[in-house]
Amino acid sequence: MSKMEQAYRVAWKLMKSKMEKERPEDLETLEDVKKTDVVIVRGSYDFIERVFESFGLPFTLTETNQLEEYPLQPHQTLMINIIDFYPLV
Image (cartoon, rainbow, N blue to C red):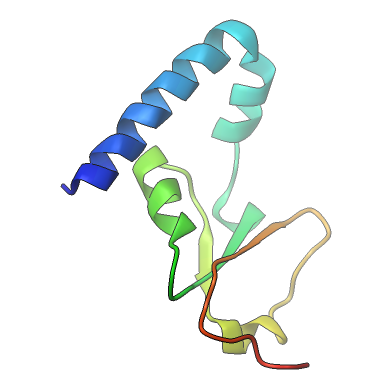
């Protein structure tokens, strides 16, 4: 496990502990997230999916070139990592 992954796990433990005390309803919402609720577009420079993996949170990973055709729904959260370029639509 890399130092960054260790840092993510420590951050999750701290955040979860704080949420249990101060925002239990938000923690419950977070723990109820399904794989289809969060769509992450793969990037070249940053990797939010690594944070989600370390936190044990489910997500769907897709590619930039698939985004235009991706069947996004109003309830989904879309996260786009930074890449070299975004194709013009």
